[in-house]
Length: 117
Image 1 (spheres, rainbow, N blue to C red):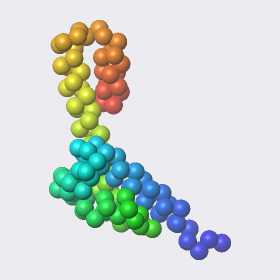
Image 2: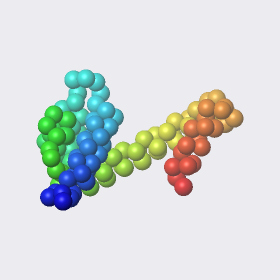
Image 3: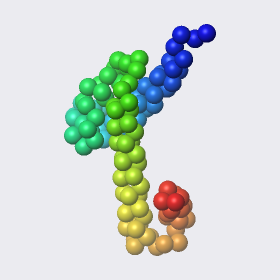
Image 4: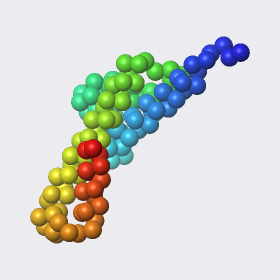
């Protein structure tokens, strides 16, 4: 009998949190030397402490608080929504320039429509 039945779940939540933190960092950083500044900007924007980003990158904890997990989840979802809004805006600009029948624009518009459903 396993003495720690939730251990696998805890590892998965830490790994998922690290994945979200890594993706948020990748999208926010302006270059290789900007990682810590990106973490500070993300901390201000989403309320996830700077030390959480640092720990998930350099010394992943064995467990993560539900509060931090949910904050990272919400931050990741908000970032994905922001990226979709940016894509939709860029599609509108490109349609005005190239035309609305361009196959690449049609495919990109389909992605945005599927996300909105």
